[in-house]
Image (cartoon, rainbow, N blue to C red; front, side, top):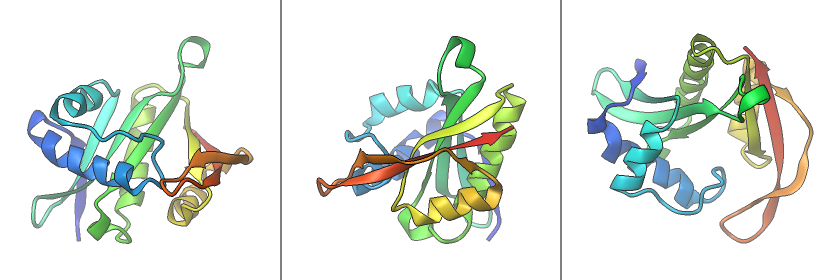
Length: 163
């Protein structure tokens, strides 16, 4: 499987909303609780510094996406944040790794100095493994910092990567 990543277009919005909402609905990784609709989704993805989509080249099928944006403003504006979503049936195929590596290159290109993840859920073992493999540094643990869909709380582990 050959994957390419490109900037999203208006024609992609319905598909990326579906992929994004699938992760939101899972309730185990994204802090958002409300799904996006066509209007809120278009606004959300357009307001990012970059929204990238992963395309399976042989089939032209969209299999994932990421968003990149500043993590803060002013004196902390050099720090960016990103979120990644892969279609459930495409997980385990290293698409997340492609998206993370693309976001690192895009963040550098955009002038950011640090990529920070504020809330990696401790039960998201695939993400934790990937971030360690790529060289992200864990910043500690925030006990019970994430409300799971089932009502329980899990720890979150902030990470950063010096660009």
